[in-house]
Length: 403
Ligand code: NAD
Ligand code: USQ
Image (tube, rainbow, N blue to C red; front, side, top):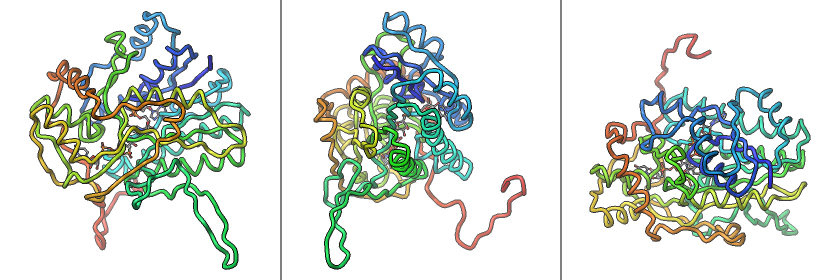
């Protein structure tokens, strides 16, 4: 049994992971500031599934007879003393860090959201590292990063797990080196995950912190064995233009009779993982920490890669849904190939759920159950990657806006 703090444990990945870790007998405390719920309110959207309050979630979990989970309301980016003091009291063996603003479209909306995403994600991650270092805790930090830090083109290579083997020459001799795979972020959100990587590299080297960075692909699905145990344990399901991710959006769109919104040609190839595998991977990462003094352990957390176009076709074939090619609001390659290693988790025993395994039905059932809660008006993606300023055009701003 380990004492585990799950930061961001109220979110889409964090909540089912907290339950899974507690079901495995770990002593779990969630830290969250409910910023995700607040952003729903700000955008005028809500999860398709009716998510219970944290209080109700935790009492429903207690009813299942599993080890209870405790909760602390902490903003890890803004309240360093609260974060440090709680970690000092709890002395966790592991800190699982999900607590960041994770939507690329939200991070590209405007200057306010760009700045929020950078301030929240970079400060939050740095505060965790500083606190563990200041308190001299021997906690293993498990961070949820993104497959997007690599960019989405392996140039014909299989993208390795974090590090790239290179050869450098001084003109006389050739030396073999392993460097962090060069980052190539496609949004401000993805940029913060690239910055996280550099902070991890520094703190592992300088402070000998034990860090695992999980480079996760796009998560799909909703429920896990633990969230199915009680209606108040249900996981969130985002489908709006900012937070809904592509496969869950397609599955919802097919059920509610909305055309499947393929951006551009749909030739964008991405990595995917089912939520049930997310929670299993995090548990495996928790059980397999690096040693003190090791470099950051990077594991690619994904089952397979697939193009958006093929995904839309798979969903349309299964449901009879219509596919619509819409203008791409993002600045991204129209077509790319992508191959990515997931050897590290497979070696630890993961047998990943594949897109062809028939689990689309499970998500479709959830969507059918709550289809009457769907607000069709929030489906379009309104956030664009277009620069706010056109070259040569100077916008006048008030002093308070620029402060
Ligand atoms: P989410 O937005 O549903 O959950 C994030 C949680 O963190 C929310 O409950 C939010 O309130 C909390 N949070 C954010 N900032 C915080 C702060 N300053 N202090 C305390 N709590 C804070 O996101 P998710 O989909 O569960 O993603 C979790 C992590 O996994 C993110 O870091 C994301 O980048 C990564 N990830 C997600 C996906 C995906 O497809 N959902 C894919 C790859 C990686
Ligand atoms: N897309 C469509 N139609 C839609 C929505 C998206 O064609 O209706 C396209 C996008 O243009 C993009 C691709 O699908 O090419 C993926 O978009 P997405 O919103 O599903 O995923 P993304 O923005 O990449 O972000 C999500 C999570 C993020 C995580 C990332 C993993 O929100 O937290 O880090 O997936 S990865 O994609 O590997 O970078």
